[in-house]
Image (cartoon, rainbow, N blue to C red; front, side, top):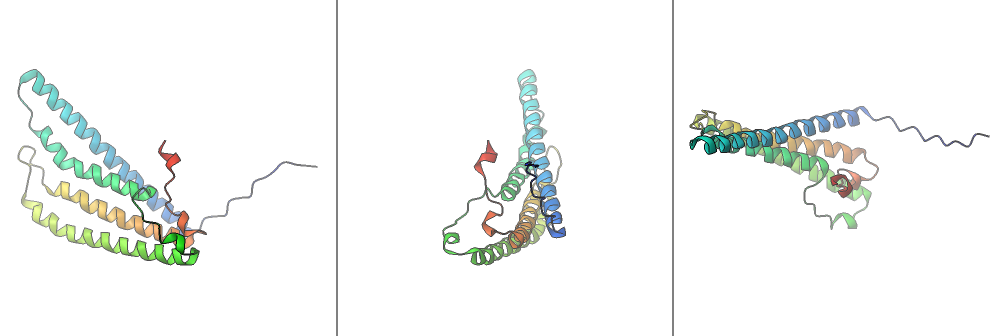
Length: 187
């Protein structure tokens, strides 16, 4: 008699779940590259400025502008990654009083509100991009638009994250299991 245990085959994912997973992975990948890339460029440029200043008593100038241009990208990349991992502050007092159906309605409504808010902010941010188009950093000549474009990237990333979370909430057996932060993953 064969007593080996064969695990149940995982249920195939729906096409919507596959698209959501691909979109989420893409957003996380882009956000990670932007955050780490911004941090690395800021570090290298400021370190170069320190070395040149130490050796020559003169600065290069352009490295001091890098934080102004890249720090918004670092911050917004981190904000989007935190949203993807469910690491933003959440108030869950109401969730304990609602059942699965009530929580599903609450969370879907919440994601719709979040998506609408951040897509609206991205739309309004386009006006800011137009206004800052004539501003440029004096040494590098880089337009201030690049720094403000980080905000639009973040707002769109958060809006898309809300939409993918909504799809996950609609498909999950337990709506409270979507984007739950597991502290063990932080170690």
